[in-house]
Length: 147
Image 1 (cartoon, rainbow, N blue to C red):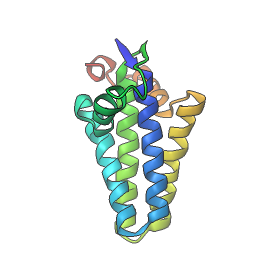
Image 2: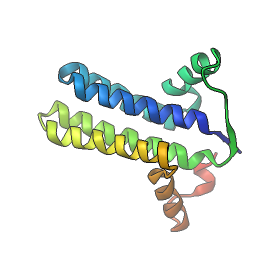
Image 3: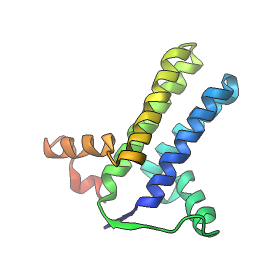
């Protein structure tokens, strides 16, 4: 199995920019951006080929030559798990923002930004690490997740 590491980088950079933009814009528009980013990550985790960031990457970024694919031997399951976690945290952030807990919502949004930037610049994916630890402990069936 391979993973396009440039697609991962594109996802991390895109979600970082979107959540920063949501924070700067604030209000209803910021809330919509956070919710849409959460939905995008959750869709990508459940249906990798249908994820909006991936569609933009494949249909615009690659097509116009702005980036080239960089496939590396890797298991995509930990990356999907990380997307699921990021999407879940942003979904909770959305609920917090809707219910008037703006501080909590933005702390969660900035946490996702920090983790995405850690992966983007340092190559450490906390969601992937958690997936591997859960698989090692027998909590996640790795063969099911990898399918």
